[in-house]
Image (cartoon, rainbow, N blue to C red):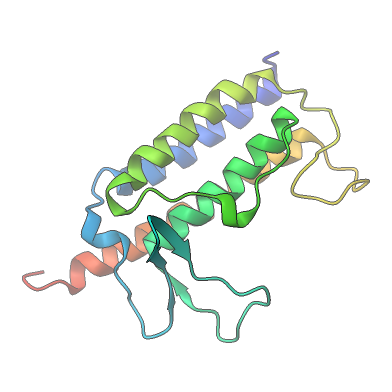
Length: 172
């Protein structure tokens, strides 16, 4: 049921999405796997799909992620969040598919559409099943606010990478 908090979270989400959409509208497949540094995390072809670079312990220095890796990461945390809110068994990191450079925008738009359908239906006062540990006292409202913050961070990272590639390309 929609209430003032849901409306606030939705307005904040729409603002955040608008910032990401600015870059998605200008994104070309060549941007997606562009590596801005010698040490990058990206998506790599594997079998008939793609595999993200990954380390269970964060390396030092932290590799610079590509737009491709960031878009996979957004899909991972958002799909797992949606799984938790729907009461489904959350998918493992290895089970998160990535559509390749040409499918990034459609995938993110699809996640946005699913999120905007789910948000008005959740009980914002229910205990949060994710991303905090059980018994943390966090609620689904905290999870929804976290989605907005995480998306804002990833939107800024993707936008910065897209702009850096644009100005570093020949003829810029």
